Image 1 (cartoon, rainbow, N blue to C red):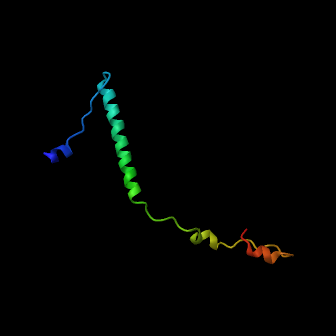
Image 2 (cartoon, helix red, strand yellow):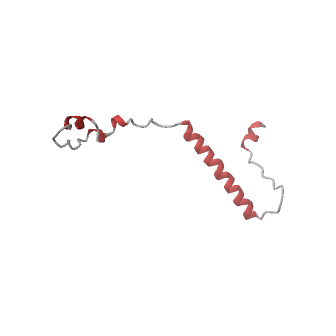
Image 3 (cartoon, rainbow, N blue to C red):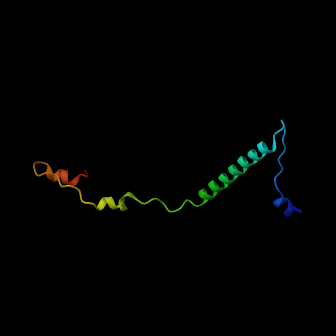
Amino acid sequence: MSEAREHAPERIRVVRGNPTPEELAAAVAVMRARVAAAAASAEADADPGPPPASAWSHPARTVPRRLPAPGPGAWRASFWPG
């Protein structure tokens, strides 16, 4: 008996008004889409995927940058990232 209840379709009751079959079908479609979106969101939250890569491992860090122009303080400018 409980197994039959688990697989029984949900019942929809119109409390007020007299919707046409098309209006009722549209309301059911919206509700089913919202339930599916909530289920997909819950599933996505369960598996967050791999953590984001660290900025230290980004390939752009290995690209050489232009060296500072020679002159006073050039040795200081060569250390600081540009």
